[in-house]
Length: 335
Image 1 (cartoon, rainbow, N blue to C red):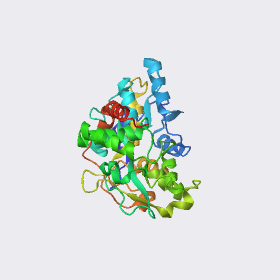
Image 2: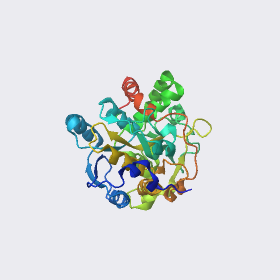
Image 3: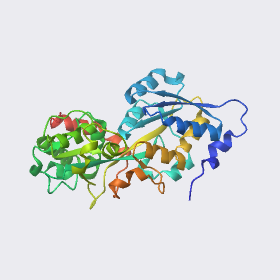
Image 4: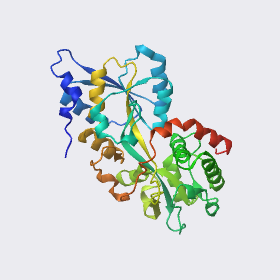
């Protein structure tokens, strides 16, 4: 059944407000197409959206510096690990919404309602079809000596890898996670360099046979021209890791209410709107991600087929164990 945002409790509370309402968003998303998302919200509620964009760490620092005088109502960023940084600086407050908690599965929400996922991004294994007969089927297998000198993966400072290791700490324990990180470091084909697209291009160039990347970097090569990748997708295969176990590691684009929020009811209305079918479809289709609300589909991801996501490991763990993950990376000399 389609979920209608117009029934949201925050909208009912705001109905009939005489003053012009607004909500101020600090977002690390840099997509012009988000204009359509916020215009739809304004059309349905009459609430004007004022948006400031920047890098996540810069926005967190700005919120911290502004303190109680910050105009920010809503903070949106990618990766639960970055939300951990926001949580540590005490710039968030609980959103207190039954609408959100009924729509978003518990594993995609902070246990104290400090933030929730609006879309999902899977970190999966890619490989060269013509050079790899038996690609690793689990994250743990990436550390197997048989893959020595074959793996391209990003640096230890990359938030995606920190969250992946945090999930392994939770699933397998700290000692096993340390052994895994050391094994992957031994199996690297080159020093970590560039972003996720560069890991996939490493397969194309022959520098590596196996790469770890978020799924949508591969899908972008079908929806737009990605130099060096679009014309070479046929030889790249993929593995959904840990399908016989806990499932594939999935991270988030996440949203939260700022602690300072001068417009808390409008902020709550916008956050609830982000769980609507319109917003869920927008977030997912725009960047080839997976919706956070069950039952909402995204045709752009059909190319990768179905998979079992890890729903047993709370995404909040990616934040709470991020420092431990970085310490392990440092200890095993993962560049």
